[in-house]
Image 1 (tube, rainbow, N blue to C red):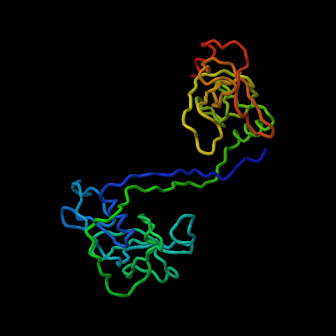
Image 2: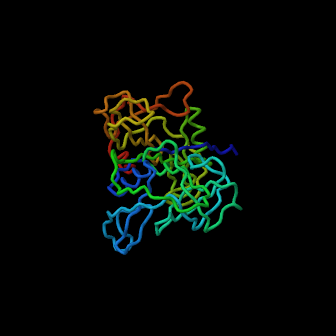
Image 3: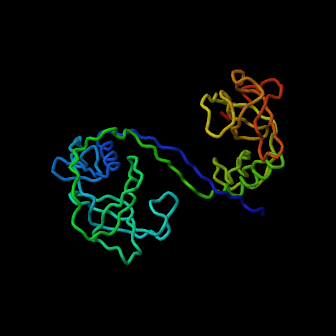
Length: 313
């Protein structure tokens, strides 16, 4: 049996969020080495602050400064820090209740080892050298045995307040397409398209899934389909994707390859975007060294009859 493919995969995009008055003041305060909380209707001080009371749902606006020192309420040791975490050496994730606050803030605690950390230990903020108005302006917490830190006397009003943040959302994982799609991908390298037939309903699925989505039984019989096919549905893309060297507008379509009972999607080229239509007959275009078709182009055949592909819409 051929080896099943696998490869590292990264999904990453920038997440942009605008800030309301409470979060804006909190993050701007961190830039200025000030920690702000918000007072609830029952007199508690929440840090980090929230915009609505978690008990009454009332809108909260009353900001109050708390100290940069506090007490560890609970913690967990991180033996192997990952990319993007606050510290590159082992550290503790800790919930710290800052002096003057009634809730705890989660952040990294720099300590020589787990034996040096305990609930109830006193800590203080280690500020980042370069601060821009983000939670990372707190580089981490560090052990501290002095008196509570003095307050700066801030009222929550700052010049040039932070109005938005951009955070990179990222997921690193190893992807394996499985046995069926490994065979499909390997066949594409030979400029062949191979699906699998269901032993029950006899439908041919391309790309294969390893099991019939209708009957729920495993599929193993390989069937070569195409290479030509029919456009069943399509969309016109008007927004240029990052790192994709294709000028807009262009067309992506579902294509029912001859002999297949499931449409796959691919780009349509060799024809103006406004002339692509349902029923258009197309064929793959390969480039040297490519493992899959670059795009599909019209074959010049008459359009397929609607009844020939209506079940694949």
